[in-house]
Length: 139
Image 1 (cartoon, rainbow, N blue to C red):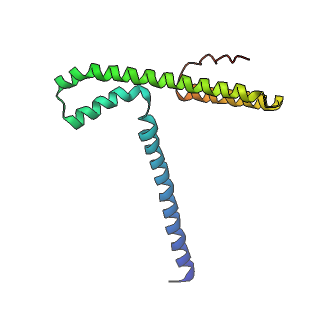
Image 2: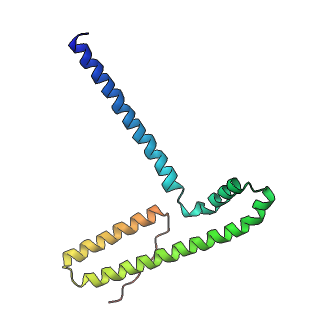
Image 3: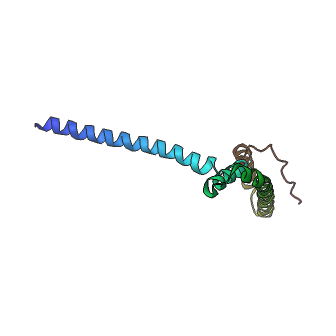
């Protein structure tokens, strides 16, 4: 086997290895996004709870029908807790920014305002919420 053929074989193996790595990263990333982010969507909690309990406990259709209202109530309570917690976190951050703004220059306050707007747009897009009324900071 001559030297040129050896290098071609090595390059071919490396190319196949790199292509496999890229394909694996793409497929793994798609799976992870679906598995971790899509499944953590708060609107799907109730359905996942029902599916999991049905599979793990081998529930009959009658049992599933009887526990469905309990799961639906639990889902609504968890959704309310999540919403209330999110609102509280946002209010705390708004208060912190208001207190920090006193120590900032005009340019820094402007940059802080832009950061808040960018975060608000991301949050509204990420959670598909209608644009919330921004809390009015009191001077």
